[in-house]
Length: 106
Image (cartoon, rainbow, N blue to C red; front, side, top):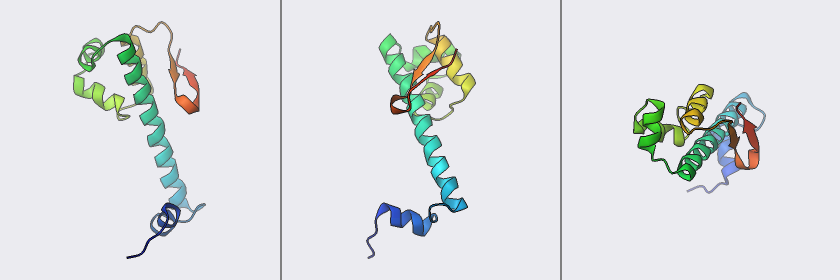
């Protein structure tokens, strides 16, 4: 059994740093992390206001399962984020992305 570091595994199975394959992989990972953080920020805002996923879904016109997808970082689009914040009653929307900073939506 061969033991290797995470970086060695990526180099072997994805590609060396700087290759097209590795750049695409790293970009996909970064996007996934950013979408997760946005979903988590939405979830924390919903909880702070005291809404359940069901209540937020009703205000957005979607099912609870769709809210769950959004909060887990799936189904994240700019228009979805706008709908979420409007459903939460935000007069202005600033999304706290933790280490990435804050983003003003409107």
